[in-house]
Image (cartoon, rainbow, N blue to C red):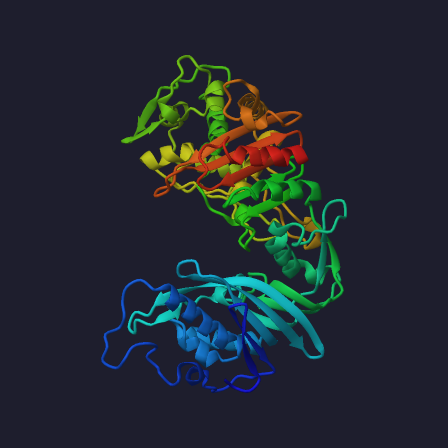
Length: 544
C-alpha cells in the first residue's frame, strides 16, 4: 500500500483513510491482489457465470471503496464495469471537489447492493470543512470476464450527482440568496426539503438581482445554463441577498408533512385571487420537482375542464338530467364507470360529483370538434401558455386527438399530461372565474411577462362549475366528501384516478379549494383519488 494511505479494520468494518495523497499511476492493484489480474480465475478458465455470491459482492465493494478513498482513480476504475467513465469521475472527486481526506465505510450488503457512508474533509485554499453523506453501489458480474465489478453510475460518488454533473469546490457561480416567505420567514432546504431544488433555481435566476455575493462552496456543477447547480456544502458564506417568494411557510410545512407519507407524491397550493404559489412539496425530495415539472395523466380531475367546455357550449346544465349508463362507446372504444355503476335520471351536477365517465363521453358527438377540449384548456385555463413562474415548469398539455383517443382525453386519460401545479391552477381558475398565471416570485423583479388566457369563464358557467365542485365535496354521494369533511370554509373538490399501462394500481389524484386557497395532489399507484391524494389536499387546505 502506498505511503500516506492507511488501511484499518474497525469492528469488522473496512475503512480507508487517504490523507495528503495526489493522483498518478500508482499500482494499488498489485498491493491488494499480489499481481493476479484475473481475480480468482486462472488463464484458460471460462469466465464465471451465475448469480454473485455474498463474498463476491462484499469483496468487490470493499476493494473499490478502498481504491477510491486512497486516491487511486485508475485502480478504482478497473474495479467497475465502465472504467473509461469511472476513472475521470473518481479523479475529479479529489482534484475538482478538493477532497483532502476520506473515510469510506461500507455497510452490510443487501443482495447485490452495498450501502456506505463517506466522511470527508474538503480543503480549499486556507479553508477546510468536514463533509458527510451516505450512498450505495451495486455489484454486477462483468459480461466478458465474469468478474464481480461495481456497476458504475454517478450516484456512487454522491447520491445527487448526475451524468451531466461534476463535483466542484470553489467560488460559487451565483450569489447567495436568503429566500423568505410572504411574511419574511426564512425558507431553507433543511427545514423544507422539497424546496431544495426550488431554492437552487431561484438562486441561479435571481442571485445577481438581489445584491448578494458568492461564497466558497462544494457543489454539483450541472453543466447547463438552464439547470441550477446544487450546493452540497458551504465552506465560507457569501453575503446573501434577500429574495421574497409567495410561499406561505405554514402551508409549506403542512405540504411537506402530507406528501412524506407516500413513496411518490406531489402537491401544490395556489391562491386563486392572485395566482401566488403558497406551497410546493414532493416525496421523495430528491432534486426533481415533479409538482412543477411532472407529466402524468390527471384522470377525472380533468373533468373540471371538460365540464366547463360542455357548459359553455350549452350541451349540459348542472341541474338538468345527463344520461349516466354503465358504459358508453365512442369510435370503437368502450369506456365504463367505476365498478360499472349507473344512475337513471341523475343531473349533470350529480354525475360530476359521482365522477360518472359516461355522462361526459355521451356528449362528445354533440361537441362536434375533437380539438375543442384542448382549446378550452388553453383559451380559458391557460394550459400550455409557457408560464413564467420564476422557476422551470411544465404547463400542461392537451394535444389534438381524434376518435377513441379524444374520448379518453375527456376523462383525463390518453394523451393529456398534467402535474399538481397545472391542476391546482385549473381549480384556482374554476374558483376565481379567470386564469391567473401561477408564480413564485413577483414579475417586477425581472420584468418577465405573465401568461394570459384569451378569455374568462362566463359567469353562469363559473357559478355552475363551482357549485358542482361544492356538491362533490359536501353532498353524501360526492366522491370527495370523505377527505373534505375536515376542511372549513367555502369548499369544493374533484377526485381522479388515472389508469396507467403496466401499473397494477391507478394513480391517485385530488384537487380542491377552500376559500382563497386551491390545492392539487398526485400519489403514484395509490388508487382512487379520495384514498391518498385527497387527504394530502385536505391537510394543505386546512393549513391555509
